[in-house]
Amino acid sequence: MPDTNDSKSAPVDAMVMPFVPYYTDERCTIYNDDCLRVLPWIDAGSIVTDPPYGIDWRPRVNHTGDDHIWHDDKPFHPSVFLAFGQYHLFWGAQYFADKLPVRESWLCWVKRPIVQDFSRDPRTYATIELAWTDFAKKPAFKSIAWDGGKRQGAAENRTFSHPSQKPLELMRWCVGMLPDDHGIVVDPFMGSGTTLAACKMEGLTAIGIEVEERYCELAADRLRQGVLF
Image (cartoon, rainbow, N blue to C red; front, side):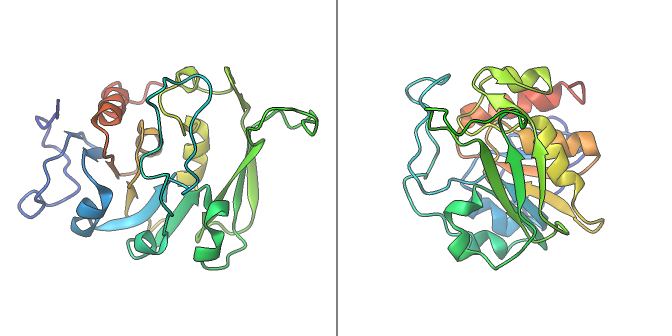
């Protein structure tokens, strides 16, 4: 159920915003709605997200049969989200790079142990993932092993919360690169709330928008625990 008892932080003017927060605390606010409805009401400074890629991807292991990525069966158009905020980061941007401005500041997440050769691995999962940004200074990579149940970092990384889940350390790395004038960080495809948890740990104000209530509740539970990871 929505948690609206904590009124200490609303990073959005409650007199104007027509949407009731699902959850709010001193740093983070969650809206359970379609991001295209909520975004025009938010003073976004930065968009940091892992959107649907438009590839109709279905998880094959570690998730239940009804897990899916919302709207992943439709083309993703980043231009809609580039219109909000000053800075932007999109994971999975190799799938829609032709729709983005040319930048050299791509980020790479190396998902398998970097000292091993996976060229003969018969599995179809990618060994790296790419993100497009318009604020990183140069191409960079971060290595965090994420191979089935073998996951480095925070204990919560080993809980399969979302089909497109990202490591907490990865998202802390991303938001840690934001310029000082980043403003409110918005994740319009929040999922289980990793971007918001990372922002909270880094002392940033963040808003997450998620259309599926089950993920809003997962994210709210994480944030209620505080910075304990």
